[in-house]
Image: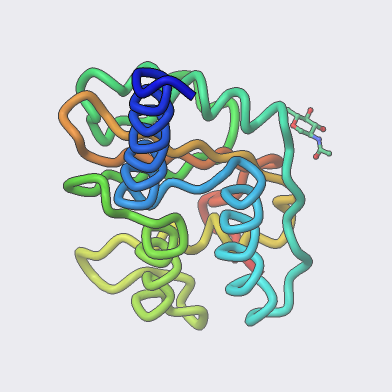
Length: 170
Ligand SMILES: *[C@@H]1O[C@H](CO)[C@@H](O)[C@H](O)[C@H]1NC(C)=O
C-alpha cells in the first residue's frame, strides 16, 4: 500500500473514533437504545405504583422529533402549541445528559406529589411525574436533541394524555 493511502486510512480511522467519542461525550446512544432507555425510565416508576407499562408510539416519536427540531435554535423550555398530546419537556445545560438521568428529573418529582390530597408541594411542580404514571396513558414517543448553543432539549409526548384537573393519576 502506498504511504499516502496508509495515511488516508489512518486519517479516516481517527475521524471515525472522534465521531464515536463525541457521541459518547454527548451521552448519545443509538435510536434503539434511546427508545429502550425512554421506556425503562417511564415504566420503572409506573410499575412502582402498579400501572401498566407504556409502549413506544412512532407517531408520537415523529411529532416529538419535529417539535424538538423547532427548538434547536433557542432550546427554550416551551410546550408545543395545540395540546394534541400530554407533553413533558426538559432542558439541561450542556450536552452531558444521558436519557436516564434527564428523565429521572421528572420521576424525582414523586417526592413532591401527595396522593392523599392529589396535589404537589406548595410552589413545586410534580405534573411531569403525574403524566409519567397516568394510568390511562398507553403510549409515548420522545426525542432528544443538542441545541445550537450546546444545551440539551428533550420532549416526550403521551397518548392518551394525562393530568386531567381533579383526577388522580392512578
Ligand atoms: C399512537 O398515537 C396516535 C396519535 O395520537 C394514536 O392515534 C394511536 O392510537 C397511538 N397508537 C398506539 C399503539 O397507542
